[in-house]
Length: 90
Image (cartoon, rainbow, N blue to C red; front, side, top):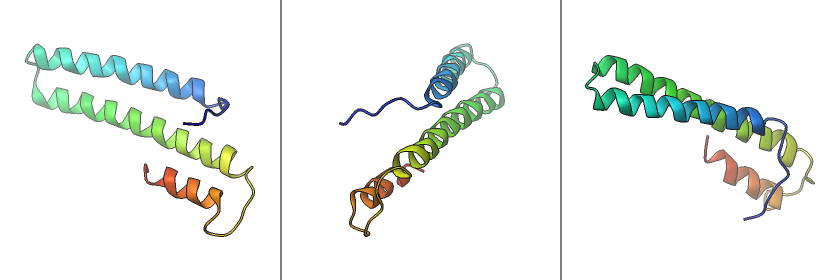
């Protein structure tokens, strides 16, 4: 796996994921404490959305800063292959 230089959005993504991790731990506690399922589902939804937004931000950042600066070429180019590889995670 090739390492890339961190992007400006990475600290915000890490912060969002750490917050989501804290919320997930709270959800686990809610389940263990037999809290109402509706409340648990609501909190799980919030965790899921936070992770989804972090993923979208990461992918958009990659497209904007890594693929935009790469040389364009034919559909068999490394840029096209990398684009195809990253969009499968959307």
